[in-house]
Length: 487
Image (cartoon, rainbow, N blue to C red):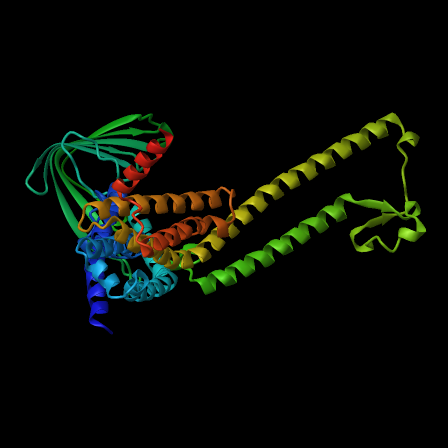
């Protein structure tokens, strides 16, 4: 490989790595800002949060990678054009396409890697971080008493303390106990202390450790409302008892994060590669066809009645007898009594209502199956859209940098941001239109690529022919020429 090729690749890799790292940082911060309410107050270990962020960062690469390619390609060719290095290469007989070739090879390799990443790594990352996230959601907030505020996260108890002394000392304790349906207890204590203990169940050697919190109370009183049916002879609705020391045990197992089985999430379309999606799509199509045939046959068998005597002889062969319930008895409405006529009409109305209900539920079920099919089809197309988006944005960024002739973080950052926002809006709009059944999965998922590909070809053509597309002086001269002609 020529030295100039190594030089261009090195000029591209540096901005690419910096841009990719910055984009990943901001996307991860956006994720934390979105889900911070679900993570706070759960007493999670740092390792669990870092593990979830690691898998989340993998799922955010499809957003950061196109932006990094677009920005670094604009910056690289902008620097080459601003330092007249691109002009020197052209004067030496090397065209813009040849100058782009080493970067194009690198981008193609990056695009192929993005496909394998999207197909094999991304489903695992989605499975991991979503399973961890749902485990965190099932975890109760950390047991934390605040002075003067009732704590209600423990089922059956409302706890309030006036003061907290030290790490575990409490003063002015008030507890409402709702654990017994037959009685309600109010417990007051002057002082108390929180004691943590781990108790292991003896069912098996691999049994789960249940955490308990013991609240040791001193110098208190218990007020208890008791239902009268508990006593046969004496009516007692209220009783009061004093204690010098008492211990209340709270089960804290719900406050610890329990990992669920990941197999619960594996059937989701986002957790599959494109081979598994192909199989799922075939299964869905077969299931839909069988359900449609079954429903059609049910309607024909239940609500289609034919009499052989009214079928012409030359048309008997054209009628499928399997779908017809034949009968030899034909009842004429004008030959029955009024009561029988009304009964027949009522029966017919009931049958019509039943058919309408069946058709309505069938329509809802059909729409649900079509939406599910579109989701699987969209997930299949997403395996390829990322790779093509990287190539298209490169063919936009590289010639755009050669045209604007500006490097650094000024103009390249502005143009990269504008084009990436345009690409992102098209991508989200296409996905939303697929979800609302306005567009098919193919056209919706490839909408941004279909629109940006002609734009990339146009910019490449203009840059190869040294077009001053963004030169203000060119437009001023053209405008002045038009004015002179009019005068």
